[in-house]
Image (cartoon, rainbow over the protein chains, first blue to last red):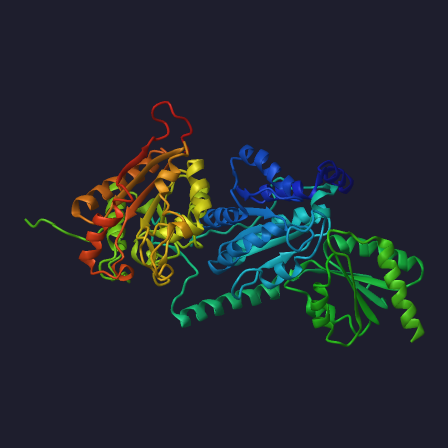
Length: 364
Length: 257
């Protein structure tokens, strides 16, 4: 039976690029409202949604701007629908106003950022340079949202389904942080037709006040103490998300002298570098945060007594490295290697950097 | 036998509003409350408050209401109506919200023929922030940011929103009304009611502009402000129906829901 099950699972695999797999996974999760605006490298999402949403009785609308798209998500979420938008870095900057409102009004929603090189118009090459924007709250005010960082097309699909449940559970926006590699790359993926999703009742939604008092969706509290109480409630919710939704993966960390730290696409490059180093007898491990907010500070801190040092690798000029240093608290050296502008580092570059670290440790 | 001569509509909460003496928003709120009652749609109506003097609409309307970011109200309304076509969705916006920061959203909602109702209150100033120039401030009008009067050679002519939207073939009903006389208020109610009825009928996008007094930032007594509407504002913003072309009528296509 096990073999048959395995074959069935293999039979369900389809070859899809990350952007399309994310779109199909959103539909599988019950998302029936998608609003988006064209921008490379996420255009496969809007094209896929344009084709698929009408087939499942859903709403696809190409908006006049990213601002409009995120506010259409706001409207759809306010009336109780599972809603999503996606974009790439410059467009996500435009959505930040709306994300602040979604957080302030506690509207569950999913926003995907298929990151490209910046700043400004930048390039259409893959990047991770929106880490700060994603994890620190790119809009105004004290708000947080979960940031999921998948590193394979399958994980992107799985996390997309999960994102809708988490958004509903906490009445909060959730961000999927993809990039130009993950979005464009084709891999075999299984997207469950009817995944077990956990869509709760939404008694707070604006569905017409038949048989109940009117509902109000707002983030405006002109009384400063009332706004402080609202913030306290939000912070308590964020603390619960930090406790319950933390995700990370460690590989060969137990005996590692040097621990690579990387997320998303770069974690795959680092995994190959780790294997190459292990073949040379160098004890290298990998720590991969799968949620960037909340960041797995404790789990990373727990490794610092065993390893000699860390190498953080990112497609940016050094952003997550700040969180790694916060976790390690100066007790071990934390080195950084990054590429910017849409350039992707090769495995050899990471290996070379690791060799330099081992050489230095050996010399000291 | 007693006869009810006056009552607060069920669609309005029995609360004191924050509006200044002589402000038009209270009248517009009242008209909406009456219309929602008369059409029997209170239990499926969702209103959207703008950023501006009407931001506290959810404290006054006795049905479901959401806030929206400055100018984004038509996009929020679009998301609501597309997700739940059975709801009656209206957007309530001032002149800064709709005609400055939200110009893209209102034009495209109109151009798509979204089956929503937009109530556009034009009093020619930003009230909440203290009386700055609006896109609809008329030439020569003194505001906080036009201390020598609005100079069109510097900041352009005041925008005529319904006329602007009338070039969009999928708009169903566009009208301009005023609150300066009981007669005009009754006309405003008729126009607003038609705008809601069109949505109920699936006839498409409606916008009713309401020229409204702001005595506080016009520096006038309430009655003087009404006189100014007649003498100075209506000559620039002529009242009447600018476009009446419901979808589904006269062979037009595109009934939304």
